Image 1: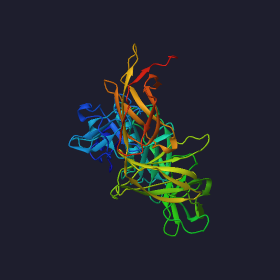
Image 2: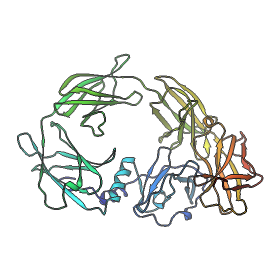
Image 3: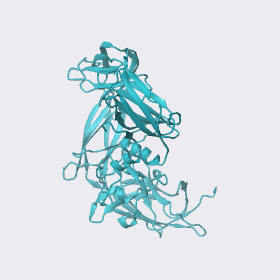
Image 4: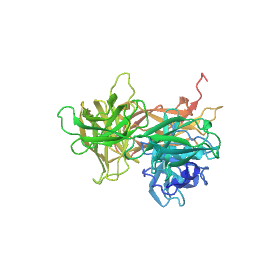
Length: 497
């Protein structure tokens, strides 16, 4: 950025549109043809990939809410390559989110980039206020090259917007958007104590234009040195992330460092005061200590305990690694506790890993398109356990077809769905088995696992009463089968309605 003013507005969002990765692929049966997608993307559309490998998109002119669990996910396949598909977890399916569409794309590469671009987009027409500052040391000498990191705070969510660097005379200018939120700044330069300024209300900064220059003073830094070790063996823990914060609840860290090959670390940029310490490393239990140390400190010791880890490899029926497959772990039989699945997406070599599980019995699944790992892998995860598994996508899910018709005097809305509810939730892949209805009420549910299902018909959030026709569906164990309901499902609204 140099010495130019930092403008955190629509220009930042526009710049992000021209260096975007392609969407992850998900091999699906194409239910939505490219011609069915809106021909022009909604104004200022932004998308991001969710943990279970679907794209969530929002437009400037309205929210595109997440699909409910009983709604089918729209997905679009490349007409030139039916294996190249994109799945969406929102109703909005814009062309700019399709990797084969020419022109700028709108899929951002991280949640942070998504929230930043969304803020910049949604506040582009807001009035601008300017914060003019000057950074000096305690003797009043002006400091060049100080980084000023900027966050916007809305509730408990902090979104980084960028950073400015002070000029030779120690001055900087920030152009901020006015609105019902606050800003936080962190001033940092090697050898000096970092300064955090939070709860800056833009409406109190004044209108854009000449303003008094605010002076920020930075003192000499204090250091905190220490070592991270295994709580049981005393062996050094390499690569642990250490963050010094003013209080355990603070979102913004004052300083951070990683432990070296011998477990030692040095935290710089500290003031002569007490700090809390957050320590984390994959495969180890995270630690947050209150009033952990007072800077300067020379002999800090942090002890970490091993966590619980599930790692492994997903490959296809031919034994080749399967990238971008969805992996899910479901904890079984926990009385009174929800068994929400934990999702991963495999990397380019088919690997996956996740930590911080509760001990217990898990069912582990993998899916890519209609190909699944069946039956699920049952694993016992002990306290401080580290389990490695291999999952093979060698089972093609079944298809269930049928027709839903309304009883005389009742009409179905365009939001009606056919849903298959598994009788044994822990043995079913944690993904909705849903089929959208066409204009004749016919539906197709793909990728269904063997088992017995209860048929449910939903209209929005309402469950319709099945007055006539099948209420259960039996899916055989044979892969790639089609189960066709022999008679239509006649539905009506519930009597209470």
